[in-house]
Image (tube, rainbow, N blue to C red; front, side, top):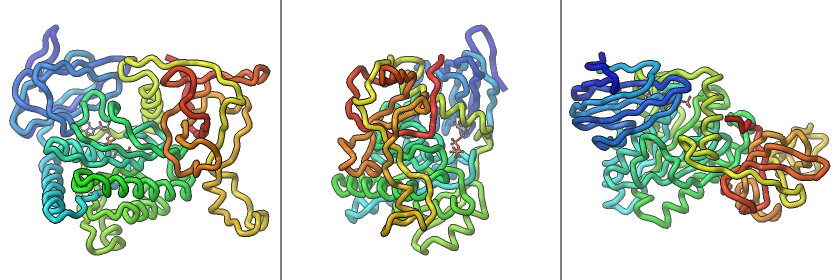
Length: 422
Ligand code: ATP
């Protein structure tokens, strides 16, 4: 479908409502340029003549409402134009949210709170991005809340977070320029500690409510909530819990009639539940690809996109930090101290003794000062990875985004590991 291929790249001519989809081959980069017309990537308008660089594995869609000419330079795994997209329905969804904002503005009430749900690989995160970007293009500042601990769209995997989208996200960098509010979960699936997950979802909703109370713009702009693709059994209960915690008024279900019917049945009547189609462009990811994406996200935190950041490695003595893990191993009821139930264990802050088993684990740097603070519900301010341990010297080497010293000394251990090899 390419119009023209030469040494300078491949040109694609898109007419109104066309979408150019491409994937960057592994170990390759692709430079994209819009030569004429108007186009957007996941809701962000493209600047004519700017060269956008996408790295290995990127899956990109350029949509145009009016028509445009795009040039791609580099090795793509696929690159094709599609005329079948759900973009008109996604735009209508945005229009409905905007109407709610206008009403909220006039009546001085809360703006829309929408949660996006559906199975894995249906484009939930992408729809969140489109809706946030469309909102920002109208001068709104919607909060994007990410409950998908497996991917970490606002920060790194293993966290729940939120950020205020005041400007459309950069097509190359997504939200990486914004500083998110993050809470430490420590695992890649909510199922690894459902009690902690529920607690943190509620805490995140609480903090967002406080922000909304302080700023009318934030309150009116509303909140777009991303979820993970776990929609059966306990996963379904987690979705209902999240909808309740954020007091959502809209639920967008992508590509699953069964989930749509269940939520319509189980959520209060004032919540509007809408079924939306999935885009044919959304790429299915294997377990391996997901693990690679997680790794890439952590690498990006330390090294930046395109290795634009220079992290630091330095030594810290065991005595300089206090390491904890959230959640103690489950004990039978009969072994629990009086007055404590098994659920309390799941959110308990447990000291971790330095040992070789900490090697390559990711650690959140808590904003808490000591165990006296409520560490579980305190936000985190950064991450480090333990890259070497010297038991004799009683010291770790850590990979950190900034030089010595660490900003705080309470570290929370994640299940998630990262190998710092290029
Ligand atoms: P999960 O819940 O499993 O994390 P998801 O439902 O949130 O997945 P996304 O992350 O939004 O799915 O999309 C999966 C991949 O498909 C992403 O890499 C995204 O860039 C890509 N993608 C989304 N929409 C399109 C499209 N229209 N054309 C090409 N690629 C797309």
